[in-house]
Length: 182
Image (cartoon, rainbow, N blue to C red):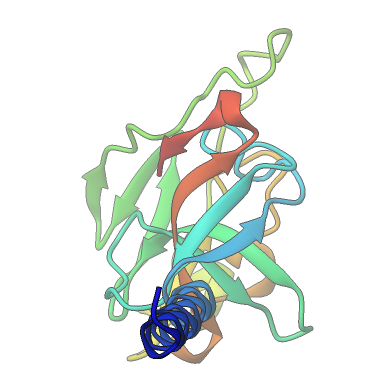
């Protein structure tokens, strides 16, 4: 092989390696970000020690599973229940958004085999009493964990804002037995 041809191929290989590495860093840093799941407040959808891929580019919709940072700097993964302008309440273990009954097919109400069936999965609350306002503000979201009995969520720390949201959880990739889209 000619010496000039060897250096041309070598230089092209170096450029492609840097390009691939740069693209991998951009994708990993801005598009598909790994997030560990800590705790069992999303049990039924996510398990303790699951690793999920989060993305930052799509718009948040009702019932999306999001990753956000609370006012105290902790990172949480919860489901969006109330959108800006909504009023959220629970009565008799049923979700009401703006006084309209809404189904929650993603909930696994039998998370604990020996649970007491007389205890509601989600305790009743009135939005105005809980939050001190009639509706969520312009950039506010009401979030809840899927394991309602143990979840620390908007019922305890209040609404979150758009600025708190880091991204949307999209895919569980580890452990392999738990792989699924969210």
